[in-house]
Image 1 (cartoon, rainbow, N blue to C red):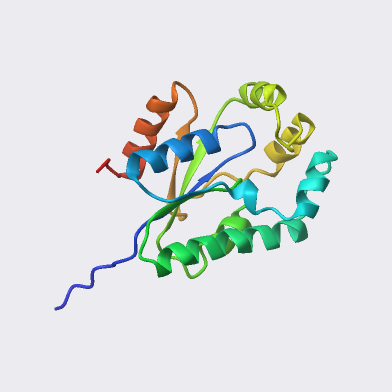
Image 2: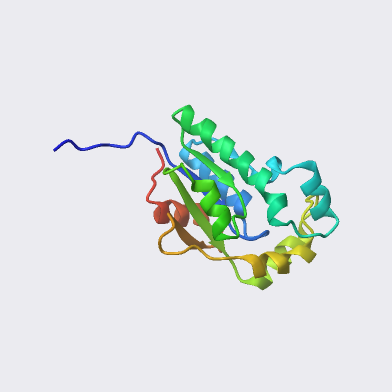
Length: 176
């Protein structure tokens, strides 16, 4: 019997509610692994940014073009034979299913934190379009990873270096 070995490089979607540390952890993880990194917020449409800046939660219809842009970035990595790391709240199962549809190399790293920590972090951020008033809607919308989804959950606590170590261990990756 011939054994088939996948040549697909992993693409990790660092997910969770706003303020959980997605950008910090994903960027540091990408640096540690030498993988390309994409900040998912940079792929939002101008309309989405304006809506969130005004304190309005996005609808599923608002998110579809954004999720598809993230998917296109992942497809570019796969076509180039590259691994990659991208941030995306990916709050609902349906969003994660859309992101991984036809992409067997996608894995999720779900960062979690106590809601009071998240509220404090978002409230103290400067120069970000996501107001703290939207944290509650994200917490309400969050559907945690299910056992049949490819991914792991990691508590967002400690230093960035500690978080990267926890993420590497949970994902089964090692620094090259």
